[in-house]
Image (cartoon, rainbow over all chains, first blue to last red; front, side, top):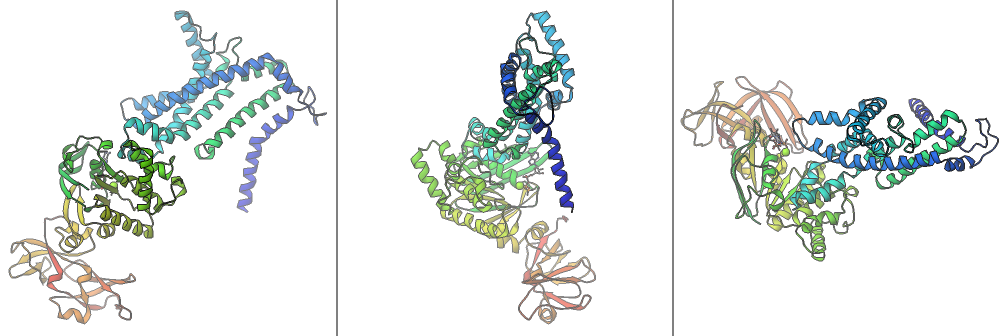
Length: 264
Length: 357
Ligand SMILES: Nc1ncnc2c1ncn2[C@@H]1O[C@H](COP(=O)(O)OP(=O)(O)OP(=O)(O)O)[C@@H](O)[C@H]1O
Ligand SMILES: [Mg+2]
């Protein structure tokens, strides 16, 4: 009996999580400019429409560039920060830890405003306009995802059995060799999880980007929002479906190399 | 095969003195067991030999080489860890070959020696497995092959059996002992299990609070413990506090007098008389022995091959007696029944009393 209740509860939660996704994908194929139920028919038309729209196309490219660079920077620097934070005791360690995690606590909008003001100040004093290019966005997104990278890689390091590294050293490996032959391969799960989370968090972010984009440097979520201000047709569902597919593909590819259920 | 000399080594972790001016020499193919309660410094001492812990003072020598300031990767020790510490991302062959690779041994020679090492631990054919595809006992044997393939000068084992079940503990333990003897390895084995130490080691080193309390063969230490701590750490014992008297007798604080064995304690010295539970006889056969006591049965515990009897009597703490069970001759009595207990003078042991508990 309790088993029945438990399984129906699990099913309900799953449905709650998955239904909107299924619904959006479904709507993307409606052969109608309005949301009518049941749909008069099905079509690929909205995908073609989305692909023809330069705003979405540019948004998609901008998003991919920003996400790729920000995730790479955050995984590299996150890994180094995590090693230092987990493995070494030094004065100011707690402060550094707090600082690295603070972007998680501050609302994205506030973070965006702060960065916007900061970038303006830089433009005024140094005449470098970070907002006119993707650089400002990349900096902002790196800040956004770095806490995730530090946390995930750090958790993996904390769980690591130090005696494995000692065994390598005992067998004659110098510290550099120990790091590249043993430590780094053992960090793989954490690094993959960090890269994945960085990608997803950055790819989906709207609030932080909102204040930092400039014409011609719009991310995909912002393009979607702007489109929604004036239109309400399945194009937006088609774009979302592509987004969902990108993330799903990423999850599947990752899962081939590292079992996700083990790291997240 | 080499030898290992530890000379006046001390290790402080901040205010904690983990190893206290300890000296120990192991010459040639000998397996010694470091034995002692939790926190007495066994692991710290082993890790100092391996080079993972720096000595605060003192010297460590392996053969002719003073290794005190040599980093761990150049010490040529072979270490076995409690958690196996295999490289999970490498196959068994890669694990075992790692030390040879670090020594720049060519691939063909390496593979040959890896196979030899695996056959030593009866794991031929497992070359391409990953550690997670093996059982605990197999993993520990891979770790043993990995440590021995480099032909270490000293073989170091930190509680290598503690993650294994009772049956495997026995078989992997025997395997370690057999390899150690066959290859003539100078070995240090850390354990807090006295059975393991007695089973495997040539010499036991009993530690407490960073010092060596007593060292010697298993039977030496069991039969001639030099203090109450050793007597109760290695096996059980009954202690009577009192004084040695002239003419080979011993009087307890409670006024009992026993005949006791020869000892180099001075007459009148305060001492402990230690009587092992298995040295005590009960009933009619006790009456013929040197020392007898009228006691009351306070408890009986059946333990298969043994029966443990708790006895109470005036003027002393309870004493424990262990009786060998033979078919049809198990000890039976009611709680509270009067019984005669006795032991021979030679089966007891006198220990100088330094007031420790
Ligand atoms: N890295 C360290 N920093 C501070 N104190 C330590 C450190 N390593 C060990 N100690 C202390 O040194 C003492 C000896 O520890 P050690 O690990 O050598 O004990 P042990 O005999 O191996 O115990 P166990 O049987 O529990 O493994 C303990 O008091 C321990 O708390
Ligand atoms: Mg230990």
